[in-house]
Image 1 (cartoon, one colour):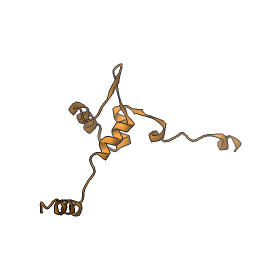
Image 2 (spheres, helix red, strand yellow):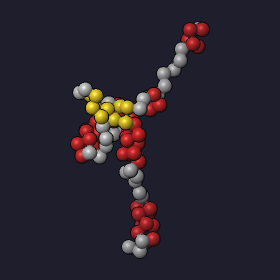
Image 3 (cartoon, helix red, strand yellow):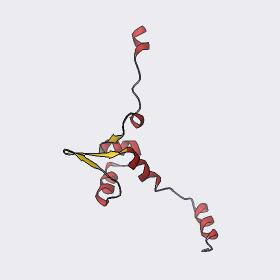
Image 4 (spheres, helix red, strand yellow):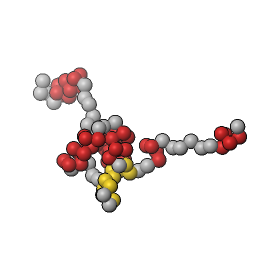
Amino acid sequence: MILNSLKMKKPSLAIEKRFYSVKQAAFYSSLSTSLIYQKLKEGTIRFYRVGRKIVLDRQDLDALVMANEFKSSDQIRKILKEKKLM
C-alpha cells in the first residue's frame, strides 16, 4: 500500500519531450505520419537528422498546426465584406 503511494506518474508526452520522431510527432500533432513526411519533403517544417533518425521540434509542430487555422464560412464572409470584395 505504501509502495503504491510512492510511485510517481510519468509526465505526459507533450510536457516531457522537446524533440519527437516522425511517429511521435504524428501522435503529438494528431496528423498522419504520411502527412508529416510530406511536409518534410516540401520543406514546410524543419527537421534534424541525428545519425539516421529524423527528429522534429515540438515548437515547429505547434507552428505548423496553428498556421492552418480554419475559418468558418461566416468568418470568411465577414472578412470579404470588410475588404469590400463581396
